[in-house]
Each structure stands twice: as structure tokens, then as C-alpha cells.
Length: 280
Image 1 (tube, rainbow, N blue to C red):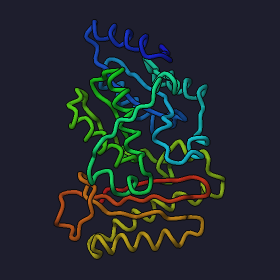
Image 2: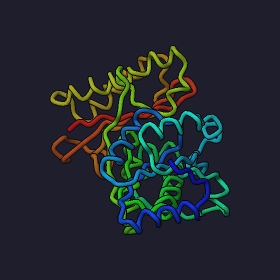
Image 3: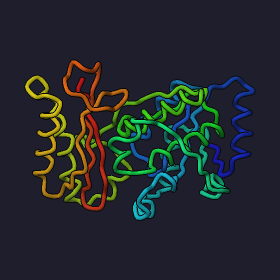
């Protein structure tokens, strides 16, 4: 595995890959890797000649400075896991390399960015768009792989690529879960034993809500899931939202849309968790 911490040598290596006609699959991460990341990498490795991974904790997508400070960083473990999946190239720049000057670009994603995470984390998706576009410009991948746990982020990136005609194919990948159903996340390692034992209730309640689709309207399903989650003493619920699976907007009747998901965000102790489940 080749490791690059600066942009120019990374671009030179990408150019070498291109000269021999190799295709590049890219998985952007913020490190603290887990099995969910590795699944993305395995797929990228299988579908492309070269697997490129980035590790960069992007400060401008954190609206909470404490969250940025506490974000887990495990570089030695990460490198070992990357070698395990036979990663060809790691791009791991520091903040000064990525942002030698402040990037004040403002992106417009309309209603897509005003709901759910966009409402609770102002500026978050603009920060995501800035860094993802930079990474695409630097590494010029053929395909980039994103997990559906961050479903709204995936939709934002798809919109970014479409708006600016960026020549990369975005590949959505299913949520990877622990055996007890908890969606894998780098933040999970910050949960206490007690919190970790309770966290799978999120998925359990969402699955139960989805199973009631034939007897509940979208609004009633939202209300049901909200009430059940609020019964868990350690959960501090931010939102439950049912939305169509493309524009992520609310709707009144199931037959109003072709596909839908139920989304949740909550605080468990000092850790913020999100999840979603496909309804149909």
C-alpha cells in the first residue's frame, strides 16, 4: 500500500495508474475504520483495478467543535485494516494540505439539504460537498462508494456530481450492521457498555414500525416510532422522519411515492447516532 500525505505526489501516482489503463475505485473516509468501511472497500476492489482510500477528518463539516475534537482517530489500526483488504493507495492529508486557504464555496442543494440532518446540523452538507469535490478533483476516480447509513449525505453527493457534471459514478452500498442490528459507525466505540447494550433498540423499533405499514399511515408510523424511541430512557430523540427515497421529502399517502425510508437521529449519552430503514 502506497501512502501519500500531500496532493501532488498523490496526483502523480493516479496519473501512473491512468497511463496503464487502470480503473480507480475510491472510498472516502474519516478514519476510525470498521467492517462497514471494509465492505465498501472490498466492493470497490472487486469492481476496479485500483482501490484508493482517503482518510481525512474534515473540520468544516462539523457544526459542533466538541464533536470534531472527540472524533475517534486510530491511524495504526486503520492502516492494518487497509492492508487487510489490499488497499493500493491511501491519501491521508492534513488540514493545511487540504485547506491552505479557507474554502468559502457555497453549494445549493435546495430542499434536499433543508430537512433532517440539514435542519439539525447547519452547514454540515456544505462542508461535505466542499471536501468531496476536492477529493474527486485530486483523485479522479471512476467510481466512488458510499454507505446508505448516511443516506442524506449520499443524496447530496449524487446531486453534487449531477450539478457539476463530475465524471464519477456514485455507488450506493447497503448498511452494514452488527449482529444485534446496530448500524456500524466510527462513533460506536465512544458508547459506554450500558449505552452499547441499548443502542440496538434503534433498529429494532424502526423494523417494527416498518412492519406496520399496512395499518399505519406515514404520519402514524412516524408517531409510533417516535413514541417507542422516547420510551428508552437514555435516548434523546432529535427526529424521526419518513420521506421518499429520492428527494427526501415528506408525503401523506404511501401511494404518493415509488420508494420510502424511515430515518432517525438521536443522542445516546455523548454520542449522536443516525440510522434508516427502507420501507419499500
